[in-house]
Length: 260
Image (tube, rainbow, N blue to C red; front, side, top):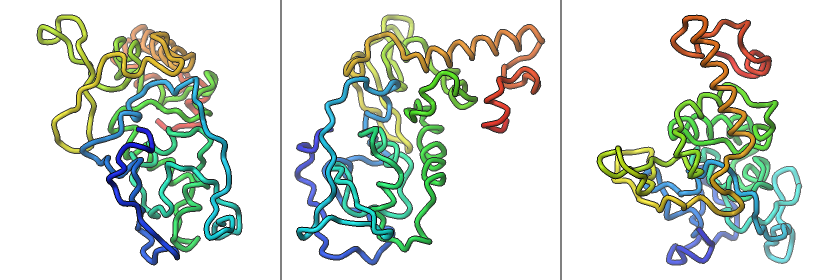
């Protein structure tokens, strides 16, 4: 969604930081969304390879560069609200982090009006994205560390296990609706929500843009290959699932980076 959309939303006007540490300012980029109406960007499988990102400058307020509680300059990301709750929802964090790959957790924490000791740690924010957004919605992970084939881990394999070939083909984790009660050709995409509500429909090629054709990224291809290899190994050992493999069969990064 562009920043020009949703201009009917009235933005907060603050002259001083809010006293409520759970306050998040309204903003046209995110305020129209909710657990019932999630941003479609969440359901893009591969990150865009071609993004025309604006130059980053420091945020200026009252003629001076804005600074966080440590005295460090705050970057001016135009899609971020001025103040962010110390308890942000997982889907909103995921939305912001996907919008601009330069955004860091420090940038998010810098906008929290809470005292330093009440701000969540960066690892806590990352875990919230995984626990409250990526895992329940079965979203892909755009974290740059995960983009390296050698760093594929258990979570990546768990994700691809639940994706269909058509989802990978159309670069989305949305559901695909087929003709003839599921037996015919794919018709369109439908999104998911974190609460019960009617889905929103999108065209099949909605995410086949910004440098992504119907060929998945090396990261997803590697995760698929690993899933098939582990599944085949489990079958040879008489196991029902790759998850039941003994420790000796796990890749090294599974053993040391994630518990089973």
